[in-house]
Image (cartoon, rainbow, N blue to C red; front, top):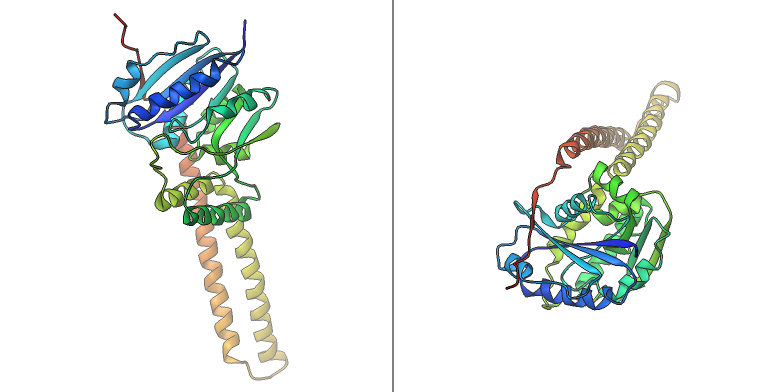
Amino acid sequence: MPETITVISPCHNENVTVIKFLDLLQNTLQTLPYHFHVVVVDDYSTDNTIKLLKAFEFTASNIELHIIRLRFNVGHQGAIYQGLVFAQHLNCDHFIVMDSDGEDSPLAIPDLVAHLNYDIVHVVRGKRQESLSFKLSYWVYKGIFKAVTGNQMNFGNYSLFNRRILETALYNNFHHFAAFLSKQKGSRQYVVHARDKRIDGKSKMNFKSLVHHAFKSLVEYGEDLLMIFLKFFILIMILFVVSISNILYQKFWAHTAILGWASTTAIGLLNMAIISIGFFILGILLVNLNNKRNIYNSQSIFEEIKPVEKK
């Protein structure tokens, strides 16, 4: 009996794009010695995506299609999460997450399944098809992410992982799947593959989307961000104590004139310290609130769509 692997792919208003993607996916999967469950997560599309999906079927005997439709739109990351909720009940131990717009090329899957002994296998992005301004913005984002987290973000959601990682994701929930994976402990491997152009040639990712994407990735490292504010607070307080000590020494021991900027600097440092500790306390409250929210968000909000029976 061949090993079973599940492919999870979210989509929203993809129209015929998702059908072309499934055809490309079949071309690759049918050549591999595994049985595949393909889970397409429709994030409450308002076009004819569902109608087209219901009429689609794989001709390859080693591929089984599952279509789930969310009861309301939850966004890309939420759709991935719901796909994982569904996939946990399938009889398999390895899972692949990839987009359905064609940018995550199915041709990378043979390289992924060649490393099933690893907990996580990332597809590292090779050449990108975006504009120069987008590439520059993405380079800045990666620099900020590296500075804050200490980890390199040169991969996206496209990855393979085992059941332990899936169960961890379902227990903890996530805002940004790639950043969540970057935090996980375990064996890790990387395969390099260039991102293809969208099948319809119109990318949904713009500068605004990239900014939102960046914020969500940093949310996964909320505790690390809080530590930055705490360290900054400690540093400012040390400088404040040194500044106040110098002022007191000049006034009561050295009996010399105190420069005006010394008092101004001390007050400024105190204000910065108050702001830093304020952000730290607010951050703790938000992280705690988010952790409580995650407990109630681990529920399914989908229905499985059965394909149209062929006459």
